[in-house]
Amino acid sequence: MSSNESANAVTPTRAVQVLWRHKLVCCAVTAIVLLGGAGYIVTRPKVYQSTASVALLPVSNNAAVLPNYPNLIASLIPTYVQLVSSPLLLNQAAAALPFKISGTQLGNDVFAESLSNAAVINIVGESRNPVQAQQIAEAATTAFLARVRGNGVVIAQIYAQPTVPTQPASPRTKLTLAVVLVLAVILGLGAGLAWERLFGSKDTRHRAGPAKGAGQPADPAAAPPVLGIVRGSAQSRVLSSIRDGPGASDQDAWRSLRSNFMYALLGQDIKSVTVMSPAAAAGSVTVAASLAAAVAELGLTVILVDANLRRPGLHKVLNLDNQRGLTSAVLDEADLASLPRPVPGVAGLQAITAGRPLPAKGDKEALVREQLPRITALADLVIVGGPPANSSGGRAAATAAGGVVLVIPAGPATAERVGHAVRDLAGSGARVLGTILTGLGGAGNGESATAPGPYRSAGAASPGS
Image (tube, rainbow, N blue to C red; front, side, top):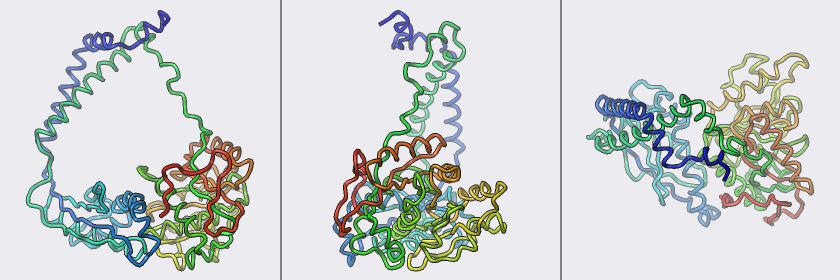
């Protein structure tokens, strides 16, 4: 080790010396955090919580659900926990309460939690008034049961009704003080080190430069997981699949794709996903429509949006009129909430077509794409069929959503296409959640297909649902 590297090394002895040199800063920050935590404990108002327990049972007459029930519940429970806090459910619960409150305000008073190793969700309502806490939990539970009823996958059943709490749910004082004390010490030590970093001697700041390799971004071309493989025959039957349900040959493929897609969203606050291809004519519209229908079958409210304003195709897939759609929000100043139209045969699925063509000149296309993030307030999930990723409109549609799913034609150049698309989207700030391979041959009778090269599966996130 060179003398310069030795001088830059961070050793326990050197850290202690730095902390001792700035002991006043450490003590001051620790004292401030302790006093703030104690003041919060003393002045914190009492909050009451009421809990309803809901069991998720398999549909006994659905033979496809029972064998996959453990995997199905593992993928669905996090989604249903998020569903309890969705704007639509909260608005529905707020409307049923005997006192005046908005869905936005109710967002601070309702949450759900899952029990480990059990298909049970606890829906909790809290308030400073114990009676109102019970009413909030009951209204949220009723709204939740209404949202998941009849999805053909699980049956939600209450086994513990919410009751009026008699004791506040404030944390125990000793436990809270212990947490505050630990946090105060950590922040105090951190403040001492930060002070040395910011205001230490010039020589110290010079030696404390960034470590080798620090701040280097991850490889933007890293291959995202393959969420599913869709055969050409499955794409050609997308309309009948949405209206009448997938055929026997397509069920396993779409269930597996849906399960992998939901796994990709776990633990992330993603309310919208753009489905697009690196170039035109890769079947992204039909894939987006089928994926939206499959997710809606779980009991979620899904809005399918056609953002390919220059070459729209969703209205053709769903046989809908295209005179009124996404562009109407700019051309006609239409209210976004009036644009979604129900898709016949799929409960919970609505569609917004592209709408009338925009003028060739002007910035109206950019104004239309600015509407995409606002649609997320209207549903649990928004799936956007975007233009090709290699277009300026495609990059704009990708960055307007929380994540991107790439539809890639399978073949010898699959890895190269994925790499180019991921690099382009990463440069625009978009996040690629995974890929869907299309165009593979075969009879499509439930046979498995193999992705070429390194793109073979989504890893652990592959149980069918």
